[in-house]
Length: 504
Image (cartoon, rainbow, N blue to C red; front, side, top):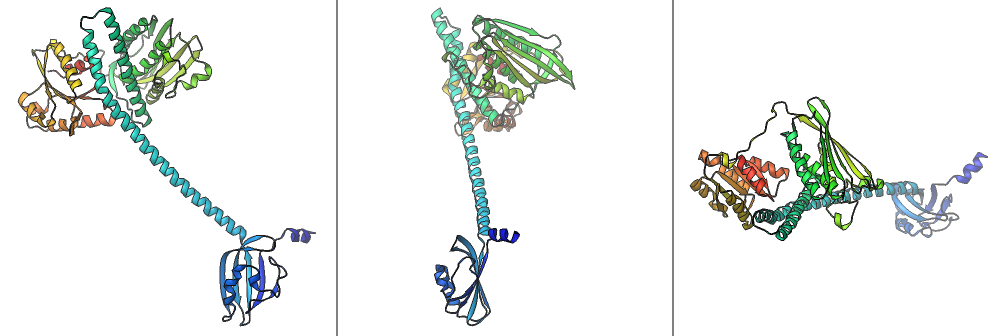
C-alpha cells in the first residue's frame, strides 16, 4: 500500500539517456521525455543542437551545462545537463531537474536585491528629508531675521507715537497697530521655537530667579489682559513656595503665558484662575504645581488629544484663527523640563490645565532684588553709544529711543571697515553690534575688538542686535566675547534694560 502511494506522489528528478555519436537515442528511462528511443536528441529541445558536436570526441570526457530551461512532456523544468562520453561510439546524457533549487535561489537573490534597493531608497529618502529639514530651518531662521528688522521699527515707533498728543480715535488706531504687531511678533517666535524643537536645538538656560517676584509681575500683566476683555482674573499663590529657584524663567513665562493667553482667547465671560502651590521638596529640588482654569467654551472629549499637536486647532472659527503652535510648544517645553501636563475640559463649561515642574533650589542666593543701574543713578551726564548697523529702520529706532532719554549721544557706523578706527578715536561706553553686516558678521568684528592692544577698548561692552538666536548662534556670540544679546524685534524697555546693565 505504501509503495502505491509513494509511486503516485514521487516525481522523477533525473532522466538518463544513451546516445550514439550521430545523436540518436539508444536507450532512455522516460522520466521527462517519453517514447524517445531511436529519435534524435535534437527533437527533444533546441538546446541539444549545441551539444551534438561533442558526441564525436574522445572517450571519458564530461561536460556540464547549468540552468537549462526545458519544455518536457508534462511540465517546464530548469535542469543541469551532464554529457559523459564513455566510449568512442556512445555517450551518457543525464538530465537533472533542479527547478526547486533554482526557484529558491532566484527568490533569495531577488529578496536580497530588493533589500539592497529598499536600503538605497531609504538612504536617499533620509538624505532628502535631512536636506529638506536643513533648507526649512535655514529658511525659517533667515526669514525670521529679515522680518524682525521692520517689526522692530513698527514696535519702536508705535511706542514713540503713543507718547505724543493723540485724540481718542488715533489712540484706538494705534492700539490696533500695537496689538497686531505684538501678535505678529509672537507668531514669529512660535514658528522659530517649533523649528528648534523639531531639530532638537531648543535648549533651556538655567538662571537663579526670585519666584515670588516672577509670579507677582506675571499676575499683574495677565490681570490687566483679562480685565481688558471683561474677565475676572483670580490667583492663589501658595505660602510654602521656595523664594529663590534655578531654572529658565523665560521658558516658564512662555509656558504659563501660552496657557493663559489661550484661556483668555477662548473665554468670553467669567474668570481665569491661576493656582500655584508646592508639591514637595526632595534632594534639593522643588516640585511646583501650576493650574490654569477658565470658564470658556471648553473642548469635546474626542478632541482633547489634539490640542497639543502642532498646527492643530480645535476651534477653527475665523475669530480664533492662529498658528496652532502655542500648546504644542507648551507640551514640548514641559517635556524638556522633565515635567508633565494634563488637561480636563467640559464642552461649553471650561477647561483646566495642570502641570508639575521641578526646579533646583538656590540656597546660595539670598532673597534679595538685583538692582539694575539706571542713568539717573550714575554720575556721568551722558553716555556714548556706538551703533554698528546698516539698517536705516534700526538706526532710526535706536536713535529715537536713546534721544528720548536725554542721557545718551549716539554715533552710527555703517561701514565695518571703519569700526576699529572709530572705536580708537571715540572710545564709546557701549557698542551695539548688528550681526548681519556687509562682507562680515558682528561676532567677527567683536573678536577683532577683543584683540585690540588698549585694555580700556578691548573691554568695552558689546551688545548684539540680532534675530538669530539659535543655541549655536548664542554659543558663537559667547565665544566672540559678546556680553549680551538684544533680540529683534526689540522695544524701548528691552533695549534700555540691557544697556543699563552695562553702564559704569
